[in-house]
Amino acid sequence: MNRKTFLCLLTTTLLLVSIVVSNMMSLGYAQIWVPAAPHSRLTSLEFWMDNQTGFMTVTIMFPCLGWKIEDWGTLSVNGSDFSADAEIWYWTGPSGQMIWYAVHDYNLGQLAEGVYSFTFKSFGYIVRSMFFEVGFPADINDDGRVEMRDIGTAARAFGTNNPHPDWNPDADIYRDGTVDMIDIGFTAKHYGEMVP
Ligand SMILES: [Ca+2]
Image 1 (cartoon, rainbow, N blue to C red):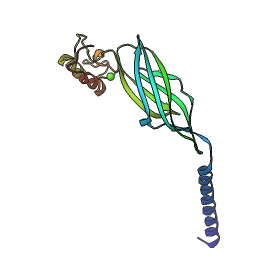
Image 2: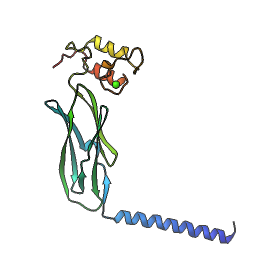
Image 3: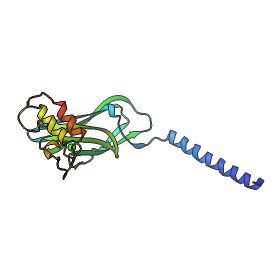
Image 4: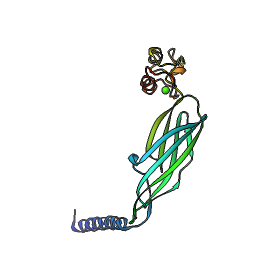
């Protein structure tokens, strides 16, 4: 490498470093609203039913005034999976210290007995998700109690999907087309329980 190439490289490197540093400085001092996601531990999801209609209440605790929710997003459904993608912003400048709560109810519509999931997002980033049950799906044979026959039915169908000879749609209580650990887990969780 000759001296001219070396100086040219050095100048380019210094220029790049100064651009990066000045960008970092300006970012550090910028007071703007940026897309953000609240902490999952400060976000709670609560499922409830009113008649046959399911609702999900999302409650977010904010530690200061430098947060705003521009849009709670629209609910989308894919099989047994619900999700909502909100637009939540964070102010990078100074803001007042005050704990406040934002609460929103999503109407999930009429729900048949089964296991479902709900995922709450902000700008596509997953904040929190949960499974919830409607009715008493663990009682697969509908005799009013979860016992070995239900666990056995789920176990026999374990790992299958349509058109496997052991496939049993009744055991697919989280209806995703496969009987897997989610279905067995929810059945086993209620072992010994009577239908309320
Ligand atoms: Ca399933």
